[in-house]
Amino acid sequence: MESNNANGRCEEIYRQLEGEKAVQELLTEAKRGKARAESMGPMGWMKCPLPGANKRFLVNTIKNTLLSSRQACDTDQGKNAKESDQNKKEWRKKEKTLKSDYHHHKHHPYKQSSKTRLTTNRSPSRRERENKKRNSTNKH
View 1 (cartoon, rainbow, N blue to C red):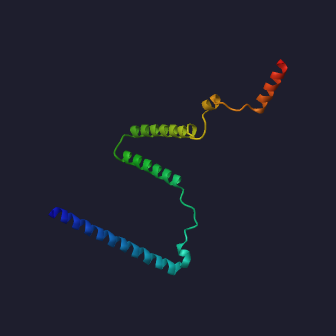
View 2: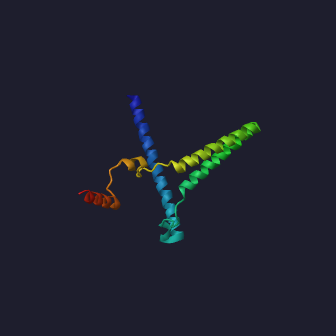
View 3: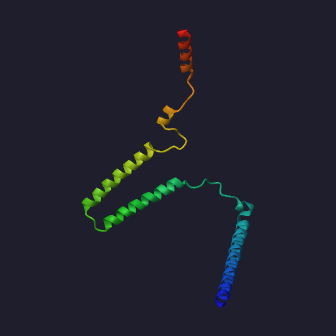
């Protein structure tokens, strides 16, 4: 029984602390808003008209810096020059294959594959219809 009471008190105290934190955050945000309104007026609440960051560029930049820092760490750890050259060559080969695979074998979810295009029933083209009409009239 006492443990349930203690747990109940702890939960109550925790809720009060959460409430106080929320109130403090709201107050600090209100202070920031007041300062922004005093310095910029109503335009302080408008969103920035500049376009957002190019996320693909940022992700690629981070990946490249991580790879280069890994290579730097590997060479700093005292690997032989031959091993690091081999690793660089292997890494370049992998990079080339990844790039070629990405560009040449990219999956397009709404695009039919060439096999599907050949096997699907499709409407005959104008030329095919005209040839069919000619052939049917020539036979009779």
